[in-house]
Image (cartoon, rainbow, N blue to C red):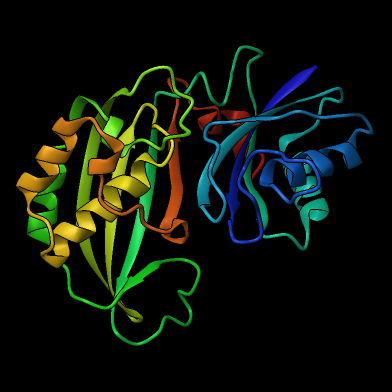
Amino acid sequence: MYRYALKIEYHGAPFVGWQRQVNLASVQGAIETALSRLEKRPHTIAAAGRTDAGVHALAQVAHCDMERDWEPFRLCEALNYHLKPQPVAITACARAPADFHARFSALQRRYLFRILSRRAPATHQDGLVWQVKQALDIDAMQQAADLLVGQHDFTTFRSTICQAESPVKTLDHLGISRVETPGGTEIHFDVRARSFLHNQVRSFVGTLERVGAGSWTPEDVAKALAARNRAACGPVCPPQGLYLADVTYPDDPFQSDAAERSGP
């Protein structure tokens, strides 16, 4: 068998999430179906992150095993042909060593969350951002976000159905910036860690938005973290503004010669 790393972009709206579910549209299912049209057998792929329903990806990473020694560019093109018209695209493909694992080999995952701050309804950004009507205090939100960086028990910011063995995680970075776009002011959250708890990023953003709106203070966020109680969390924001933006590996397969041949 030959192992390949796939870099994947998708719009999460039509899907129940990444993970395959019986009789429901998933990103994993769409790609496995496309693979089965290239090699007629069952396929199981693994991904760096199991995104939820409505969550998007700019650079999800998965790996697959193929019986045929595919040239990466040809595999990429063939998969994209069979994925149409679904909003899923393989943006890069590379040969990977047999011990490469999209999930377990990852050193860091980076998520982007986009808030659109404007009163007029979203048009071009609809389904791609969380829209709020009020202006947000970036400095206050960043002050609160800084309190979350580091190793903590994140029980407060963890879904009650989270299956992780421990609520203790290390948050490497949580940066907040204002981006002026033709469609209005966007607030971007850049969140990085080796791994995340279920709903952790959306719990962060929903809570920090309350700080930006003036309903919470940074001290309230510190108290919520210390409470280690899900009931102390602010509102969980909707999924449509969340993107899996990047995954880091000790030896990035997409920087290899094989990956370079997968381009146009």
